[in-house]
Image (cartoon, rainbow, N blue to C red):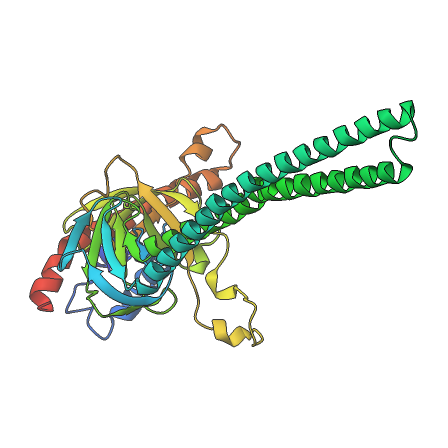
Length: 413
C-alpha cells in the first residue's frame, strides 16, 4: 500500500494535474468513474508498473524473514542407565535455579550397592589369602633352614669318613661312603625343593595375590562408579524448567528423559532466521538487519548477519531403508541465517525463544566509495537500491507500531 501511494504521487497525480490545469478537465464532469481509465490511463499504467518494480526491488535486495526466533541452548537431564526414580532433590516449580554439582534425582541402586558389597568382600578375601601366604612363607623359610642343616650334617659326616678312608681304607668301607654320598644328594634335593617352595610362596605373595587384589579393587571402583551414576548431578549452573519428575517414575536415556536444564550461559545473543531461497544470492555476511519481536513491542532491534548457511535442509539425504524421492522435499525450505545484535546487550531484554520478523538490508556504500569505475546507469541503480531500503525500514516500524493494536484490540488476543 505504501509503495502504491508513493508511486501514485509520481505518476497518477502529475497526469491528473495535466488533465485538470492544462486541458481543463474536471472531476465529475469530463473525468468520471467511467472515463477515469481513459483519461488517466498513462498515469495508471505507469503507476502499476512502477509499483510492481518497486516492490520487487525492495523485497529482493532487502529481504524479509517472518520465521525468526531467538534461540537458546538446552541440556537434557538424562541418567547413563535406565531405572526407577528413588528420590528427587529438585523442588517442584516452573523454574528452579541449581548450581553445578547439585543432585537432581537418584535412581534405585539396590543392585549397584550389592555389587559394591561383593567387591569389598573379594578384596577382604584376597587380603586374607595374602596374610595366609605370608605364614606359608615363614614355614617355607623354616623348611629351607632345616634342609640346609640336614645337608650340612650329612656333608660333614661324608667329609669325615672320606678323610678316614683316605688315611686308612680298612677303617671305612666304600659301601659306607656311597651311602653317605647318596644321603648328601638326597638332602641336597630336599634343600632345592624347600627353596623352590619358598620361591613359589614368595611369587604368590609378590605377584599373583597383588594382581588379584588390584583386580578386586578395580571391580570395587567400577561398582562404586556404577553406584554413583544412580544419582544425577547438574553439570553446569542453570535453571531446571518445568521439572515434573517424581518418585516412582521410570527414566530411560533413549525414550524417557527426566527434564531440561537451561545453562546459565545459554546462547541468548543470536537470532536464527529463515529467508526465502530467492534471496540466496543477496544474503551476505556483514549485512545490516533489523528485527521486530512481539515480546518487545514498539522496539526495533538493530542486527548484523554473521553467518549464512550454504546448505538447504530440504535436500539432505540420510542412510535409511528408503530411497530419496524429490517429492518429499516439495515444501520449500529456507536459508538459515544467524544474526547477532549490532550493539552490545542488544538482545538482553528479549526472552529466549521469542519469535521475530527480520529485515536485512543490502548496502552498496563500499562499492560506491571504492573508486570502481561505474557508468551513470550503474551509479543511479546502486543508489536507488540503497534508497528503497528506507521504505522497508518504514514498513517494519509501522508494523511494530500497529502490532499491539492489531493484537490486543482488533483480534482480542
